[in-house]
Amino acid sequence: MDRRIISTDKAPSAIGPYSQAVEVGGMVYTSGMIPVIPETGEVVSGVKEQAKQALTNLKSLLEASGSSMDKVIKTTVFIKNMDDFADINEVYATFFNEGSYPSRSCVEVARLPKDVFIEVEAIAVV
Image 1 (tube, rainbow, N blue to C red):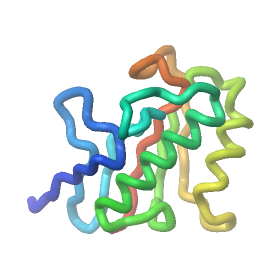
Image 2 (image 1 turned 90 degrees about the vertical axis):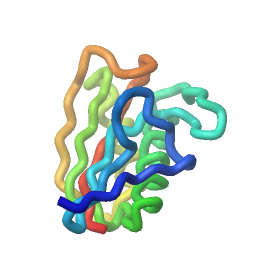
Image 3 (image 1 turned 180 degrees about the vertical axis):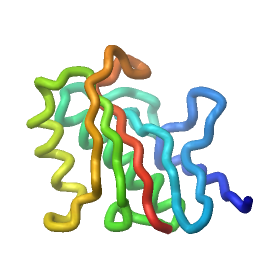
Image 4 (image 1 turned 30 degrees about the horizontal axis):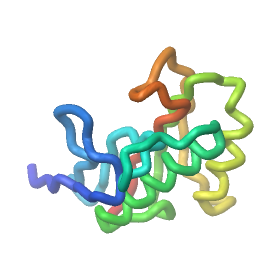
């Protein structure tokens, strides 16, 4: 199996034994992107701000792989509080083209790395 490890400094570095993303068979599978500013390592505050930063990080990672947000076919969104669903959706919608949204799962979780409010992963065509 031929696979390519994707790495970029325009998205948060891996904080464990995993790759930012892996491409195999013309598909890219990303790790979860959290709202860390890659240049500083700081976490932005506020749910909408965190959603925007996490999705910006995902976009940068996909672009580093030769893909894009337009080529995403599936996302998984992990959120700290389902009460934030509407605010996250508002930001999420700005990253994708209406009418061709990817499929998505959204799950409330007890805790996320660095105690952030959101983490997003994706599968996309390269």
